[in-house]
Image (cartoon, rainbow, N blue to C red; front, side, top):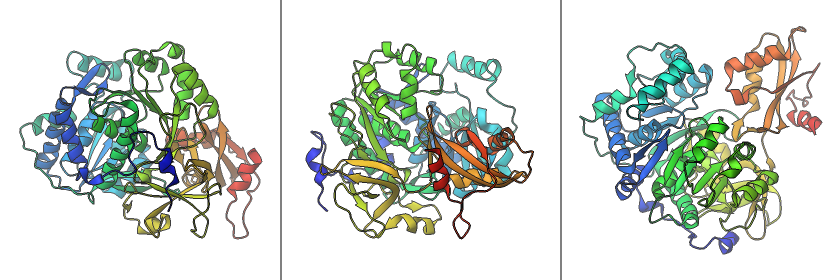
Length: 558
């Protein structure tokens, strides 16, 4: 394969990275914490943890997992937290102790949480108290034997810790009542681990670091096995790209705005891990939906790096005061997770003076596969060039490579490609083809310079604010309502979220209303998956074997 994209790499970005620089993420964590010991690593609600603090606290937590609750190498630890200081402490502690992380969306319903915990076989969970009532409903059906509960303010120190926790619990009433016997307060776990010794667990590139759940290309929730080798490679790939642009690679000190949730693969790698490698300070935004508060927080920092999705950028641009911020330090803005709209990118550049650089990847690619050069003068509509040690090939349905400009399925090869789907060799086989190529399920083309462009999605996935929503799940939940005969879910355009869910329903009960269906879905689905519109039909278009033709329904919306 001719790597035509290499001629257009930014200065200082290598054609290849050496993933064997580190045997595991444990090595990156410990080396970075020693190298940047005095620098702030993570900041949240006015409190910063230095790299030295992070090494110490994560070591205590890892020792607790090993010695007090006796977890073994490879055991899965679920983390159900928003962007708070406890997240890096828990994740890095578990990784250093040799465990695998199962990232869990804190907004999951009981059904969604149960499915993920049961499938992963997680033996322990760290959860914010705000969501413990959801865990209470399903805990007995899982293998989880240790529940560690934390409050938002737990690592903020005195006097802020009790004050923040009081406001969240008593003033804002954000903690529903719950009761789980024998829970361990997170602070106690860290404290008890202080008196234990963290064993040095040998880890290799083949060991699993994360079970990152995704619908993949088929819509059935499954865990992408991201090995230490996958994650090390993608961290080094991203660091090579971002480090050259930020000029912070050797000195550290970059200020990184982390508003996207760390449990999402985009923020996990691009922010949490890559800037750990580069010595940056991740400013964690716990509630990015509070845009007035978000802008207030941004006023405190001369930030270097900003990542987000199109809807986040658009909302900030429409928040009073955002255009008055100090953008003099901003060197890199990365947009991913969903298509960046040209109008939003152009306005972002006018307001901030910084190009909104589009990138592309999937959970199965850890996630970065393509990134635009950071020295572009303006938004170009492309998702970028294949990054270091990465190949992209456009293939037809037969799996044959297509020439530049031709539209086909985007296939990716590189050291960041997942090891496979957890306990799903059948699903793994569907997306991996000869030669180590991963079939993305996305349709696009590559131009004569190696820039990749997304045309459409091969499957029926709906993209709501960067989160994958799969029709099969929505339809199954809707069909569980006794008044529903058939249902089909498709994407519709939405000014706020890019896309939203429209549900077409054939009623069994003629008196059934749209409001009743939406309320039913709210009980079973995370908010972004809930249908925004419901339309009733006497029948749904189908193939001759009875399969619902979602494409016909989508085409009617155009």
